[in-house]
Length: 340
Image: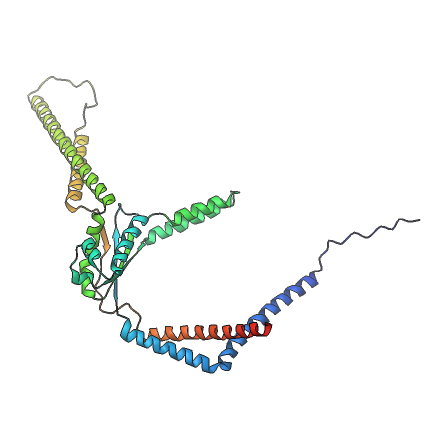
């Protein structure tokens, strides 16, 4: 009697059935999307009164807000660069100024920026964000591509992702500072006020003082080295002048080595290099380039606040969204009533 063995299950996949199911899934998804569009199109026609009333009320509110409540404000941006600044310090400092500007009593802002009350009353707010130059962006993208290429030979993808994340949040030393005011005439007065406010920060103030002290010490050291080289040059000059005089008088002195003990050309080169370094130190002490203004504030005559047409456009969009939400809530309420 033959043993009957069950046939093992086949591991083969019906390609035709697989493609059929994929086609059905795509078709059902497309039909669902079209039904959603049809429902969104049908709802306004079925609820004309609600849509017209809500959108009309939104337009009226936006119109009244633009004319009676909203005030036009002006914006200007300054790009400030400093080796003493980092992302956290710049954001913390400007955020404090923004909080002071948001207060009704501008006394804190007057004291912080050393402004007149009339100027501080027109300031609306401040913003800051890191400024990245085009060359830095290109270098960053190249480095990210190199890391992604190295990822093929690395088994730990999370390490590469963390490195990329750290590169993207790297602290920069240049920042865009934006100021909003009700009066554009105030903007030019804020440039020096903001820089002085940064200078008075205890963290930055200590570093400016120690940097200046180091520059003064370096200046004294360079002056001392220059004086010593000047003395050495005088001695060498007298020595060579005496040698030349003896040569003209027919001296029998013989130089046994073909190498001079000191090279006068190198001495003069070293003296010129020290002189250039001294000039650079004196330039830094005079100019005090602690904060460099890459681009200063500009007084614009056109307000940066939204115009009346834009406010009405935003009001229409908000009204349409509220109308859809109202219809959805009424249908949901009706569904709950049917369940009861």
